[in-house]
Length: 336
Image 1 (tube, helix red, strand yellow):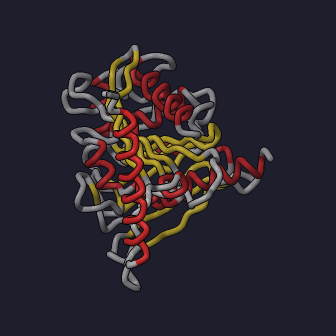
Image 2 (cartoon, rainbow, N blue to C red; image 1 turned 30 degrees about the vertical axis):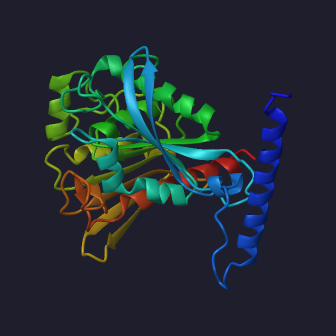
């Protein structure tokens, strides 16, 4: 007597498969008119077409920082291509989520095809979660937070197909000041800088000098050997945290590079502002300053759902994205 059960089990399995196949075909044939088709697994194109938000942790010799990365959507079937990246640095007592909510930068930048990277300062590095822009150790190439943020940017660039010629950095308050530091010490990495309510590089080297320049503005211009990368500056003229004179100091290195243009504006909510631009003889705007009247220490045109925002002001987020796109376009015309 054959006691091996395998032939019997194989026959039963074959019968079960045939029955399931027939039932599946019958169900498909009897779907009512207009009923949705059964769900199918997402294809690679469908997955690539959706915006994504990724959380990560970056370990570095100068510390560990968490971050959030927004990836813009791709059109279905769109071939992979190098895309621009914007590094966004929050202000004191903020988090990446709060900063992203208040500025809505990930929405505007993603619509323009930018990746947006929000690193988080740790309370261990600074009790108030301020970037340490005012300490000499963090203002130097290959040292401190400047090195950490530059290497984080390079890691994201390598992992997510970023165009090395279209990497920009922007920030608010302490984040704006650190953005200016990064533009100065890594000009080959960052093509442009967005400085909102911050202090330009070279005006402070410790807490005491930082408090002085924040309170009254710079007593003397920073010593420089060259101009920073193209920079867009936003500041409220009633800012009592960072003196508005710092916005003028940020424009000073560009004064000899072109002609100064000025225009006045008024938002739909009644906020008045003045825009100054430095345009080179070739037509490229290398510096842009927006001074918003009646506004304090806050992101102009931001969302009230976030902290340190002035919703009635001109849209700093849209202006920065447009400025960064203009720099990329000008560079491509200059270097075909």
